Image (cartoon, rainbow, N blue to C red; front, side):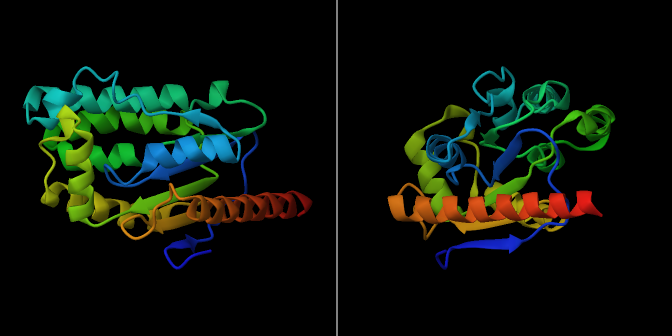
Length: 225
């Protein structure tokens, strides 16, 4: 384990039945999809990608069009419910997603207000229990200046409106959210650690295996009791 990859919360929930789920969370351009792809190849695991490219309201929402904010968020909510649905979740194996379901409410709180947020909650509260909870979360983070450089470099049109203030709010929201999750959390500071490098990736995979083994052991102990 390196100084910049550290497990910050052991979690208190036993492992759930079915395939294990690793969710990767963090602000835009933290490296979630790249890490998910590399973990899927290295662990190995089945990859689940966020469908941002399929969201027809996303660009207008990020550009500030008020009438696109709620449809964009509901698209993501229902897409994530479909991808992580307990009703179709496999009985065994390992899956890694380049997002965590908890981020849906994070972005909803940042982008919606008033009646829009109430409308969002009326749907989110009903479907949340239908989703497979993560067995492990990986929380990636980086300073705003690093994120802005990466956003500019990759050139996604819908991200052009993101500024340091928005990224700071996202980072703060994630830091608050991980305090309340029931599963283990591994945090990586991606401004200092390049998880594309073989050594850093190997250290991350070792942390993941250790955390998943611990949750399996906790589940077995719970069953014996």
